[in-house]
Amino acid sequence: MKYDTVIVGAGPAGSVTARFAAEAGAKVLLIDRRPEIGIPVLCGEGISQRIDKWNMLEGSDWIATKMDGAKIYAPDDTMVTLSKEMAGNETGYVVYRDRFDKELARQAGKAGAEILLKTEAVDLLKKKDKITGIKVNQFGEEFDIEADLVVGCDGVESKVGKWAGINTMVKPIDLETCFQYTLENVDWPEDYCEFYLGKKRAPGGYVWVFPKGNGEFNVGIGVLASLSSPGKPKALLDQFIANHPNLKKGSPIRMLTGAVSVAKPVETVKDNLLLVGDAARHADAITGGGLTTSLEGGKIAGEVIGDAIENQQFDSDFLEVYEKRWKQAFGQKLLRNYLVKEILLDMDDKTLNMLADSLKDYKFEEFSTLSLVKALVLKHPTLLMKLKPLMKLSEKSKGKDE
Amino acid sequence: MGKLRAFVDVHDCLSCGGCVSICPVDAIIMNNKVAVVLPEKCISCEQCVNTCPVGAISMEEK
Image (cartoon, rainbow over all chains, first blue to last red; front, top):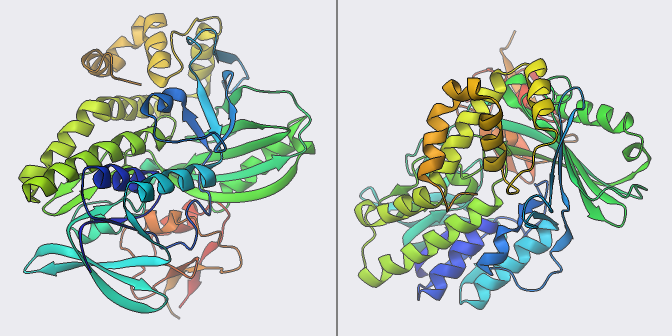
């Protein structure tokens, strides 16, 4: 079996890469170790409405609900609101990630990509140090898949990157350990997404409450691994729900765990190899969100793969344009939000309460972390010293930033 | 007395892979939807123990 490119992992990053590579004329194989794409869901399922512009998903059965806005609660419950009226009506969706992922995979298949399920990559194929494909295991049988280009879309615990010699190690200070329930029968008309901060509630992370409509809610927690202890995320979330007047009456229908990278991006290009999505640490270090960057990065990767195949050039000098383009698209944002994360982690609850208090009547221009950071700097020029490197970054990335 | 090594309780593991991500020496693999510690590789740093969101990993004598 010989392909132009083999893509490991059929999450959003993998499927979008596969689609755009196939549309550009590449012979594409997309593999996933799971028997069903999108299952298990490992996600809070919130995404920015910016995806509308990209037209990557058809239909609407993957949308649970459109967010009306967000409420951010400081440790003392001071509330900062970002409503759709304030943010020019563009907010976000809560999605069904299983359907979302399946729709993206369907699009990849429609574009001509072949898909193999229950097929796990076990190693890179190499000839004299040159990557020539991957070795896989399917139903206990091992075989080789040759390809000019291997793309690692295999998530936070990416093995493809590791095998290629990329340092993909995540430190406990750069990983959120997460736990989430999906609750039904919650009699509560809330249609804002909520975020709860505080060292006692969620050390180094936050609790999220995402309404999905008809009494269904995703309620989850992320705790920074360096501040966690065995079973802490579950214990803290159980406590949060038990103390919540509405959520405590809900019926859990799903429990899930996950690890979310809040790290800086890693090296994403080697000879004959690319990393996309969580494998590349393309996730927002403030929110832990990685869906939009996976879609954006996947599109860029797919287009670059198309060019590489047309020119029959697969060395890192040629593929470097992928790294250049994602840095242009969202690299500044990832770096800035990583720096903001470090500043936020240093703040005590009292400071967070003070910041929230100063923003409680603020009119945000858009529904984004950038909008929040800008407001903070405007309200607190004294913080400018610390945030100076960030503002330089955001000026450079004006216009194309989230 | 053997050294203490990380050990995953297969009944409690929800297979999120957090421990696989955090292990600095690649001593944890996902096998059949369950995290498995390779005791010969484990350096007893306990990072996986603290990372597990449901407390499914403990240190045991091997």
